[in-house]
Length: 223
Figure 1: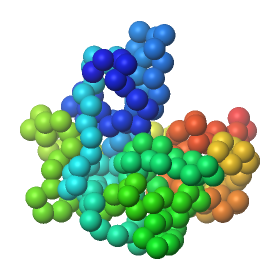
Figure 2: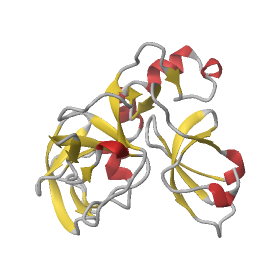
Figure 3: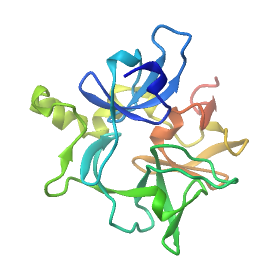
């Protein structure tokens, strides 16, 4: 890709794996900041080293150790994840291209997410857990280059938590919720989600995005 073509939120292939563009800083030699979707690891690279990909119906990929398949025809239920592919947020909503959010409730075919965003049906597709029939693999640019052992490991949240302690928040950690301009404590957790004291519920991977959350106190270690 050319640098002027790169935008925050785009899905791209880098080193044969699916990533998301986190930011673009043209003044640096390695100006593209990426998150690898399978485990949220960060990388810096050049525009010339990435390949743009636009997600399609029935694509299957790995997000934070779990596999999902995109379905553009399915209506979501509370608890489902959506991928926002055509963002047109209202004034009070805060989301952008290819953000992944969890559905809190349904209103006339549109959804309200756990981040209190109202997302219109025309803006999102549903992420269905698992792999569906005739789905297209996009976790890897060329799956044949990936050893079977790695493919199995890539779909393991247990492996992720053992691999990187930064992916292990605990009840009692305090973050600044940047978008809501609020300091909040984690009061409950599931395997892959955290619940804050001010009612916001998010995927644990979102805690790595400094545009959304900033860690200010770790329960076991005062930062």
